[in-house]
Each structure stands twice: as structure tokens, then as C-alpha cells.
Image 1 (spheres, helix red, strand yellow):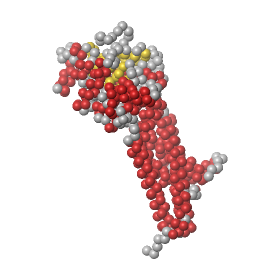
Image 2 (cartoon, helix red, strand yellow; image 1 turned 135 degrees about the horizontal axis):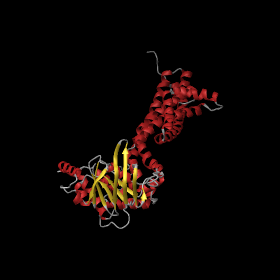
Image 3 (cartoon, helix red, strand yellow; image 1 turned 180 degrees about the vertical axis):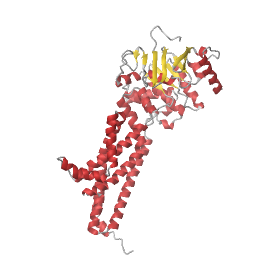
Length: 221
Length: 264
């Protein structure tokens, strides 16, 4: 093999990767936060609603889950502003898209968690005289959270990786930074090796943190 | 009748209650009265409607017709005639007046023993954290678990969990305590500690309606025993009378014979 690895050019432009990683994390955190609110509200609504509402929520989930994220990103960034009179930056557009996208996945996680709360616990909540809202807040949600935390962690990590799609609309996150360095230095192997390592390490740190939270919750007082 | 009964209406008054799950009639015109301070035990083969009856008393199940009154107030519906369901807040307030202990304990797994008891006291009874904690410790002491106040349910044995379940129910100071096969999920060696707690509550005058398969306990602790079969009340009377081997009630005799055969 005649290819000699040379990382010097990568380090010279490392700020593109580091800044990109920080933006990736920012995109993930904001989108997941909004997605979690969407997911929780719709999941709670779903389990207590009638057939029509359930069908609408299910349609949203099915639509999002069956359309590739990259298409949704194009639709929202290029398609939506031409139909409605809206102007937003690429990062805002991507956050909007990933929020709606993560919301659909999180509805499913929360819904199955809510349905997995043993009926006996709800009966016990009723028996001591808790109102429906109190039962939701003090019995159903805490138990649901304990049930769903492992699945939730996996979904969060997966959504963090999905921020790489933002590169297709030139949001300067980690993958975009890698592409920029590649185009400008042609050190394709080196730049993607470093970028992969950065995704990997960040993913592991996130997972480790989330597992800590899980353990705390399991032993919660 | 029990010596504590007085001239007023019964504390719990169940009249002609019927309920069907689809085509299956689980309760057929059940009538039953429990006086203040009485311990009434419901026995009968599985599928006879015992648990459903208990769950109707605090409206965990709705019923199709008839009337259930606690302390003169119609349960679940605004009146027996209109059959208009009470609002959720109203139902919650009514349920707070009846305590229930479950076969599968149903403790809240994310809360400690004390936390399980405090939830209702703070959210429903409006007590402060400190008051609720004090009451929780008092009741945990009563069931012999003062040292387990800060343990999570998962750290407790079945018998201990059930005693927390009892403490959670009685701490609300209900008018009547409903016990639904509370020892059925326990290992045999843990049954005694739970029944001892129930017995001491009975001695304190707590009104109780319980479903159990513990015949010896039913005989010793009950004022009256109700025998249910096929969704209806088949026999009611003092323990001695109901548990007598030479009863003239065929269904009861078969039930008791089968029960003795499997338990001795």
C-alpha cells in the first residue's frame, strides 16, 4: 500500500471538528428535549384517548418512522419555506426536523412504557384516593420512567448520531466539518478515522452517563 | 349479628348488585350488610365473584344495577336510580374513605415503605411531609416494620411488603378496610405475620370486609361469613354455622369438603 497516514493536516483544522462536535451535541440536546416533550404529551394523550386521536397519533408515528430522516430534512429545509412563507436558518430547520422525528420515536418508547405499568399499581393509586392527574404524576410516570430508561438511552444515542444528517443542508456540525477538511486537504482516511473516533467516544460517554442515571433511578429513594 | 351493631343503617350496605362481563354474569343480585366494627369474610370457589364484589365496593369496578352505600352515601353513582357516574374527583374522594389491600401487594416500587404510606396522606389528606412521615412511622411500627421505613419494596419480603400494604391502607383512616386474598401470594411461612396484623386491627374495632382462603383465620377472626357461589350469596351466618361440616347447603358442603381434602 502506498498510502502513508499523515494526521498533521487534520490537527491543523481540528477546530472544524471540535466546533462541529459541540454543535452536534447542541443540536441533539435541543431536539431531544423538544422531542421528549412531544413524546410524553402524545404518549399520555394516546393511552387515555379515544380511537380518533389514537389513529392520528399512530399516523404521525408511522409516517415519521417510514420516511428516511434525510428526506424529512430536505422537505423541511427546501420544501416547507416554498409552500408557507417562513424563513429559518439551516440549524433551526434541522432542530425542527429532528425534534419532530425524535418525538415520533419517543412516543413509542413512552407509550409502551405507560402500558407496561402494572394495573395493580394504578388500582392501588385509585384505592388511596388519588385523582387521575395525581395517579399519572405520582404513580404512572415514575414507574414508566424506570421501565423505559434503557430503551430511552438507546434512542438518545441513536438521535445524537442522526445529527450527522444535518451536514446535507450545510449545518457545520461534526460530519460537515469532516467533509470540509476532506475537500480542502484530501486526507480522507485520516479525517474520517478521527471523526469516527470522536462519534464513538462521545457516544460512549453519553451512554455511560445515561447508565449512571439508570442505576440511580433503580436505587432511587 | 355482631354485638357492635346499633340501630342505624349498616356502614356498608350492598343491595341487589349485579354485574356482567359481556355474557358472563359475575354478580347476581348480591346483597350484604357490614356493621360498624364488624369483620365479614367472603369465601367461595374461585370465579364466584368474591373479588369483583370487593372491587365494586370502592368502585375499582363499576356495577350494572343495584346499590352500594357506605355510611349512607351511594358509591360510584350520584344515585342508585339515575346511575349517573360520579366525577373523577368525587370518586377519588370516596375511595379515600375505603382502604384496600391487594393480593399482589401493589406497592409503588419507586417509593420507600414510608413513601408508600405518605403519598396518600400528603396528596389526598393534605398533611405536611413531617406529619405524614410521623403517621407513616407510627403505622409501620404497628405492623412491626419501624426499622424498614426507608427500604424500597424490592428490598422487602412478601410478608413485609404486604404489611406495608396494610399500613398504607389503614393510615388513611378509612371507614372500612377491604382485604382481597391478601395472603394468597405469600409463602406459607409468611402468612402468619400478615394475619397477626389483621387480627390486631380487628381487635381495635376496624370494620373489615375480606376475601380469603384461610378458613381457620376466617373462623377465628370473623363476625360473620358470607359464602358466595356462581355470583350470588349462597349462605350467610356466624363462622360456626357456616363452617359446620353437616350444613344443609349442598354447594357449601361440596366447597368445604373439597377445601378440607386439599388443605389437610
